[in-house]
Amino acid sequence: TRCGCALGRDYPMPLGGPFRMREEVSEEEERRLHPNDSSGNRYTYKEFIDFAMKRGYDANFGKKCWEEAQPIARTLQEENQQLRQQLQAAEHQLRSLQSA
Image (cartoon, rainbow, N blue to C red; front, side, top):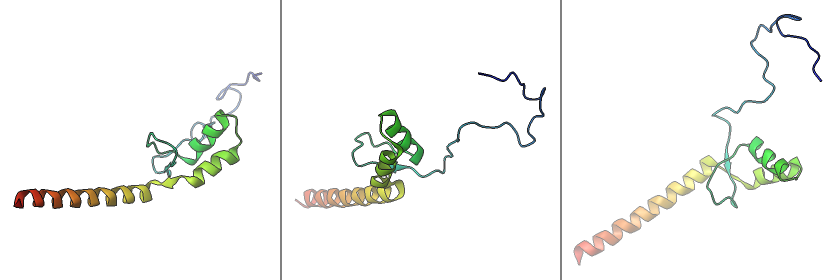
């Protein structure tokens, strides 16, 4: 039920701006990739917790998923290394074909 009070009429507006009921996610917040997620999407800690809760699990399940997931920086470094190896193999194969 609502109390009927109006912000600015019954009590003053906050000087620091409007109050936000939910936590806003910043672009700088850490995101992780879960090894069982075939979509390749990266998620924040809060998104892991929300995922668990929506499926009827408790927050500890979301925390466990977060801990199993890999930080993006590490994942990107591994992807970069793998792509460099593939490029080197392709260049080697190209040189072999050119000399034949």
